[in-house]
Amino acid sequence: MKSTYTMSKYLKTSLNYFFVLIAFAFVNSCSTDKHEQEIYESLKVNESKFIFKLDGKDFYPTESIFSGHLEILEKSFTISYFDQKESNVMIHFGGDKWYVDRPIKIPVKLLNSYTSTLMFGRIKDKEKRLGEGYLMSEGFITFKTLTKDKIILHVDGKAKKYPQVNPEDKDYDVQAIIVCKKPKIDFLEINEKEAFY
Image 1 (tube, rainbow, N blue to C red):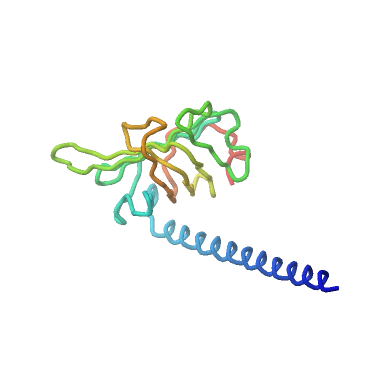
Image 2 (spheres, rainbow, N blue to C red; image 1 turned 45 degrees about the vertical axis):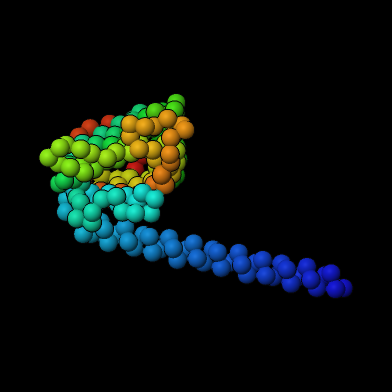
């Protein structure tokens, strides 16, 4: 009888803990969605915000606004954007039907048959033309939204300082939220009904 009571109590505690975790995840998701919508509404047409954190620290200043070259093709996706201070972010990946999963989740590795790349950098000394750049070495690029009017990406993984990008070189934690408002699409050749959501 005692063991049955103990088991029942354990299950009740476990279920309560599980529901707390679910509630926390839901609230956190709603908070993130609200933050992304606020960013979107603050932007003008063909403006983008790239909020990168490297080892927990902001990589770009809050005033940075990005725009540039965007391709959405049947077998590849490419972004090459600059801000007003010449900071640069480049994302490229390819693959047959890369857009079929929901959400679209692209794996990134140093050596990847999926040919996925994410590089980000900034100018440290404009007069001397000195910069600081990183190459994502592992992780994922996840599309929360992909339409002509709105693109929202989440980035989570590791990066290595460029040009030292060997497997044994130091890793840095990288997280990012990318929000694009009605971006100019230079090349659009894709099945929009299947790709956009």
